[in-house]
Structure formats: C-alpha cells, structure tokens
Length: 176
Image (cartoon, rainbow, N blue to C red):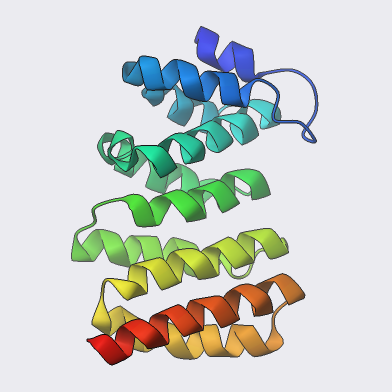
C-alpha cells in the first residue's frame, strides 16, 4: 500500500482523518492521484471512504486529474456497495468528459444509486443526473420527469435538492 493510503488508514468511519492534508500533498504532487483510485478499491473500508473523499475534493478543484482514470472510476462506482464511495463517485462522475456511450454508463450507475438505502447516495445521484442532463438536451427530457417524481416522494433531503435541481434545469431549458 502506498504511503498516501497508509496516511488515510486508521480510526473509524466517523472521521476524515488526514484527508485534508492528503489533498494538499497531492495538489503539490498530482502524480500521486492514481493511488486514490487504488484506495477506493482497497479491502479497508476506512481507506476506501477517505480515498473517495480526497479524490472528490481534489477533482472539485482540478477535474482533469480524474480524466485518465475514467474507466477505473466507472469500475469502482459500478461495483462498490459502500455508501461513502458511492456518494463521492456520484459527485465525481459528472466532472468527466464523456462520450455518448460513456454518458450512458454514467447514467446507468447513477440510476442504480437511486435504489441505494442511503438518502445521501440517492441525493447525490440526483445531483449527478441533473448535472449530466444540463449538458445534454435529450437526457434532460428523460431526467426532468424522474427528478419531479423524486422531489415529490423522496426523503426530505431528496425533496430539498430536487427543488433546487428542477429550478436550475427549468431555467436552463427556457434559455435553450
């Protein structure tokens, strides 16, 4: 295990540990980013969670870090059942530059996340789908009715996020 991942280990799932320190370390040495994808597939649930947290924080600042690891992210996102990995993946996937075929894979993963037991995973899946739909008018037509339904029947967090997403998508749709 690379030292970056060792620094993410230990403690429990209620803590991000040294995640913020690792963000700063990888910003200085972006070549270390690849180890985060290894960490997201680790046997250690704490390492998986923290590696996903660090990867999400980094790609929010520098989305291009993720692009060379697109296939690995899809593999992890599509196979992980750990809620922390899933909700971070749901935030990262829309940051990728995707072909039409890859966008279909991304949508399938996010649709699967809507069936998760975690309200947080479902809420971030809604966000991810809305982000993808905002750049694709055909996808927008499919996602809008789904978001409307989830905004009516979802958890309080899903309803609140859904209202914001619908407002944003409807505003974008009138400008198109």
